[in-house]
Length: 44
Image: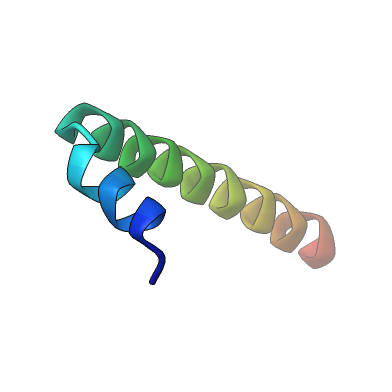
């Protein structure tokens, strides 16, 4: 790992990590909805 990446991780505030986790959860929910929509269309 490069020193630049290490210092970035050390300085990252918890807020940024939380926002990343939240956007990841939103992306997962969106993907589930799209998959569910496809399944409904296929079953018709």
